[in-house]
Image 1 (cartoon, rainbow, N blue to C red):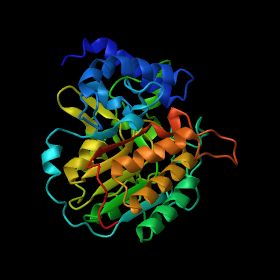
Image 2: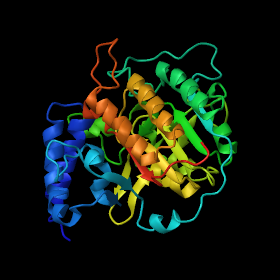
Image 3: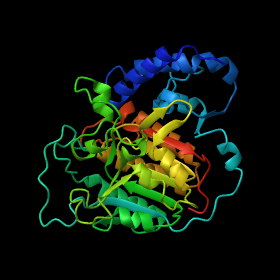
Image 4: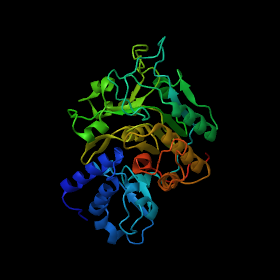
Length: 369
């Protein structure tokens, strides 16, 4: 069925994205507008449905579907009224009928040494958001993320492996790794929009990078998003490894047999929208490389909140909960305040802290985890 003109829907999505990513007070109201435009017309056709399979196109890729108000259950979010299953394409339903290839030992990469090869740490310019897994530094010097060290240790312990960190957490190591059952990377992420950055445009400021990564602006969309690994502050150290794994490079990773890729970083789910072609960025790249499922972020995420989020998510996976349901249950714990930062007096129940995470692909449990 037709939802109506695209322009008002896209404007509502942009407003909801900005409000949610910026942790603004009107985020709930903006998300309700998107629900009214996108979900309410479908409500009669969805009555009684327990699962909702979504294959977004266009600006719908930027919608945090889990946080949309349910059109059938007032006061409840969509993720609690139905089981959400996000797919890259409807063909995934056929592909997932085949058993996955056997994956190798999980690989956890966390807390890279961005200053690898330097005799002294880089001089960093202060950032407005020092706790986020994102850098907007004048000289593009990537700052350490303290919570990623703890996150790496916790996730690796749950998965029965040792985390790769510090100088060893390189792009080269990742490129040499073949088919880990689970790939988890906790670091900085970047996305550079393909337009002139406007300082007075809040949405542009939320999704656009600066400094070092600005050189990617205007390039292939798969060059304008990526993950930051060891040596990124010293790119001349190794001519074959500048410390930045772009989405284009990610397409060549050996991920056949990889059940789940988690990029625990900022804006890893961002990319260029091309109507009818989907989202060009890390999510597409990882799928091309062979990943069966990805868990990525729509916007900048808080360092400590993300570490707690990932620990709760993996504990559910280890208990045999399905991938999508483990995400929904973890988001519910954040939304209800079950998981929060009481010591620092922070409230992690707002959309900003939990709604950024989108799981795309196979929604079922990871067998043998």
